[in-house]
Image (cartoon, rainbow, N blue to C red; front, side, top):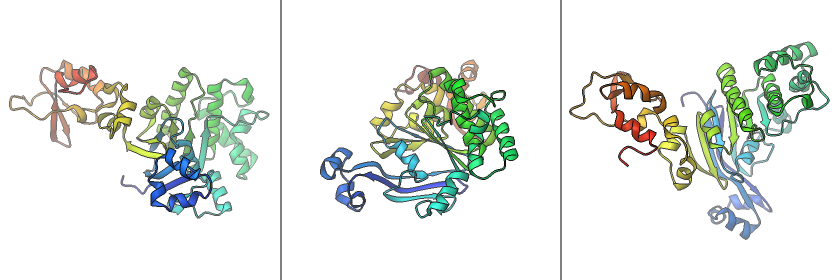
Length: 345
């Protein structure tokens, strides 16, 4: 990452329970498992020593099963939950040391949250729901309505400005939530399992919507989910959590291609590898008898997208970056992935 991170999380802990601070200050207690800590001290460590950076414009996904600490983590970023130890630095400023007034300002202008429960105001029209954050921020009526109308169009709800939330489907209500978050033009959008209550088809539409909006407005996003396919679809990088701990952080192809332990390997076991792995993961070294007049592809091309070209070529495909030959891919390597097994396994 070359640009300065928008968010830097450093050695973050959140412990719930009596005298939580002493847990973090004790090497004996921090070494205990979650269950041991609970039975010894009555405390639960929801987030344990987590550190990561989020780059400008990145979609950073935090993924884990229920109870892994991911929702607590995202709430610690804006101090909706007060961290026990560690730091959260936003654009060079420590969130931990911000006073109440500054914190309100940051939440109002710099961060926007989209929750699973849409939190729409039932007696307000869509237009007023979307303009709500701007109203709180002191924007005049004409300005906030103009901005609200823009983002309503952006999320595909033009024509519904005067509807009330209970007249809309779940997916449309979630779009209103999305528009409300976008209206204040935040630096960072925080999503906490926003689509998990929606049925699968609407959920897929909303994922596409987030991808489209990200392309169009380029916001930095932190997205919480328990769904691996959602994480792989949306995330530039993914952090996998378990019992409050960081297990692995990486791009989708890194998690699928090089899981750090059995827990991650289990998580990614059923992922269609051809949809995630790139040629970088399956290429082999050049052999003496390889002819080098075959087609060229870049190392970041996803296997599924390269399949037709490789199988149609009469010679192995060269994997080339910046004019340098990195490796070769032939039918054998491609077919091994499609059969969902590693080459040579």
